[in-house]
Amino acid sequence: MFGSRWRLCHLLGIPISVDASWLIILALLTLSLSNGYPSTVHEFFPGTLHQLAAYDYWIMGLATALGFFACILLHELGHAVVARAQGMPIRGITLFLFGGVAEIEGEPRSASNEFFMAIAGPVVSLVLGVLFCAMALTGRAALPLPIAVVLGYLGVLNLVVLAFNLIPAFPLDGGRVLRSIFWGATGNLKKSTRWAAFIGQLFAWLLIARGIVFFFGGDWLNGIWMGLIGIFLNNAAKTGYQQVLIRQALQNEPVRQFMNPEPISVPPTITVLQWVEDYVYRFHRKTFPVIADGRLVGCITTRALAELPRSEWERRTVEDLMLRDLAPLTIAPDTDALDALTQMQRNQVSRLLVTQDGHLVGIVSLKDLLRFLNLKLELHQNDDERI
Ligand SMILES: [Zn+2]
Image (cartoon, rainbow, N blue to C red; front, side, top):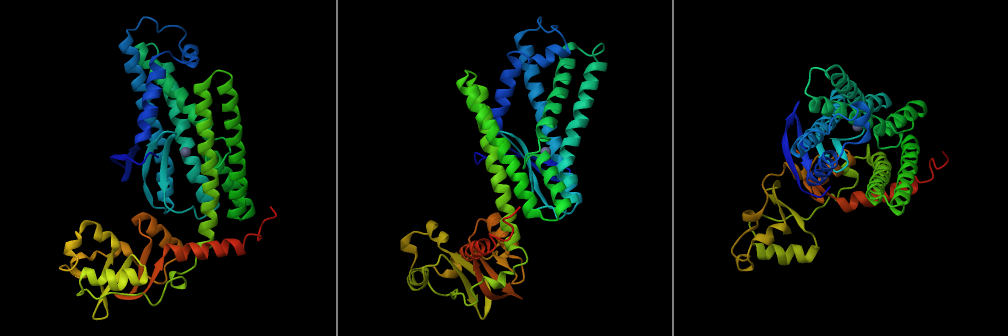
C-alpha cells in the first residue's frame, strides 16, 4: 500500500510479506490493547486483571496483536491453499493496514471454485475462534490468568474477523460467496460481479456515512477509521468489477491481432549515437528489437541511456547496451491478450516482442492493447445493461 514491503518467509511454499502500513496497525493495536482492555474481555474474565504491572499489559498487548496477525495469516493461507488446489497460481500473502491479502493470479474459473476459495478463510477464522475461546475457558484454572485472557481475546478477535468478512459486500469474503451464488444461478460472471460490487459499494457508503456521524459526534478516531475502511472497500469493489470487464474483453483475443507486424529493428553493430539519431528521434520509440542475421539477439531501450554518459555514445555500440535476457520481454503470437497484459504488469514494461521459433514476428504495446480494450468495452457497453 505504501510501496515498501518486506519478505518474511515462505509458508507451504507461499511467500509471506508485510507492507510498511502494517507496522501502523500493529502499533495501534498494541497501544489500545495495553491501555485498557475492551469490555468484551471483562465480560469473559470479570474484573480480575487489576493487579498486574504496567509492562505486563504491554507484553500481553503485543502478544495479542502478534497472535492476531498470525491468525489473519492463517485465514489468508486458507484462501491461498484452496486456490492453489484449484490450479490458480499464488503470488504471495501480504499483511497490510486493513489485515491481509492473498494475491491470487487470475479469476476463479467456476462458481464452485470461487465459493470454496472464498469460504476457506472464514472457516479458518471460525475454527481458530472456537479453539481459542475453548482453550481460554477450559484452561482458566490451570493457566496463568494473563495467558488465559490473551487466548480468550484472540478467540473473540477471530470471531469478529469472521463476522466482518461474512458481510455480503464484494470484495469481502461474504461478497465473494454471494457473487459465486449469483454466478452459479445465472451463469453470468459479469452481471454477478456487478450486483455483488453494487452491494459492496452500498455497504462502503454506509460505513463512510457512519464514520462522518461518529467524527462529528466527538469520536473522531473511530470516525476516521470507519471512513478509511469505507473508502478502501468502495475502491476495491469498483476495481473488482473493472477487472472482470477487462478480463472478459481481453480473454481469447490472441496477441497477433494487436501486434505491429513490421516492427523497426536495429543492427547490433551501430553506435549508440547512431541509434539515438537515426532511430529514437526519427521513429519516436523507446524500445527497439536488435536483429542480427535475421534472428532476434537482444532488445535496446532508452532506459539504458540513463547510465551512459553522453561522451560515450559515439564509442559504444548497441550490442554493448542491449538486454540479452529476453524471456520477460517476449511472447508467442497465439498468447491471450490478457496474459500479455499480466506479463507487462509483472515486468513493468509497456512493449513485448512477439516471437516464433526465435524470429521476431511483431511487437505489441500497452497502448495498442488499451485502445482495443476501450473500443470493445464501448461496443459491448449495452450488451447487458438491463440487469
Ligand atoms: Zn478472507
